[in-house]
Image 1 (cartoon, rainbow, N blue to C red):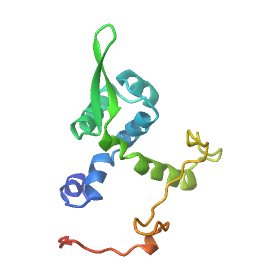
Image 2: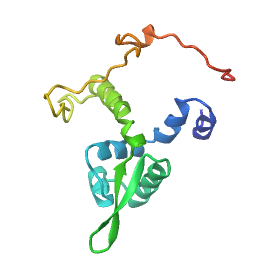
Image 3: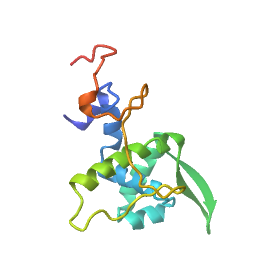
Amino acid sequence: MAHVKVADELCTVSLPAALLGERWTLLLLRQAFLGTRRFEDFQTAMDISRSVLTERLGTLVEEGILRREAYKDVRTRYEYRLTEKGLDLYPVLMALRKWGDRWMSPAEGPSFDLHHRTCGGDVGVHVACEGCGAELTARDVRVTPLRDSGA
C-alpha cells in the first residue's frame, strides 16, 4: 500500500504508521527519550544529514510530538522537547525495542538495558485488560467494529 494511501485511511493504526513509519523519525524519538535535545546532538548521535534532520524535527513539531524551546548560546538556538503527546509514544518505542531485542538482536546482545530509577527493576512492556488486569496476547482479544471500515 502506498504511503499516501495509508495516510488517507481513517484507521488508528495506519495514521500513526504514516507519521512514524519512516526510520529516521523513530530513531529521532529514541534519541529524544534518551535525553537528546539539541539539533547538533541529534545529528552527531544519529549521523543524519542536516536536511533530513530539519525535515523530521519540523514534522514532529508540527504534529505536536516535540516542541521547540529557545536557549541562548552565542545566538538564540532551539532545543526539542517531548510534549505530552510525544511522551505517550514511550510504550510504543519500548514495545519495538522488546520485539527487536528478542528477534533482531545482534549476537552480542542488546546495546543497553533499561531499569526503573526507583527500584532498579527491568523495564517491561505489557498489554493488559483494563477491566481485570489480565495480561493479553493477540489470541485473547476480540475485535468489535465501531463503524463500517469500508474494507
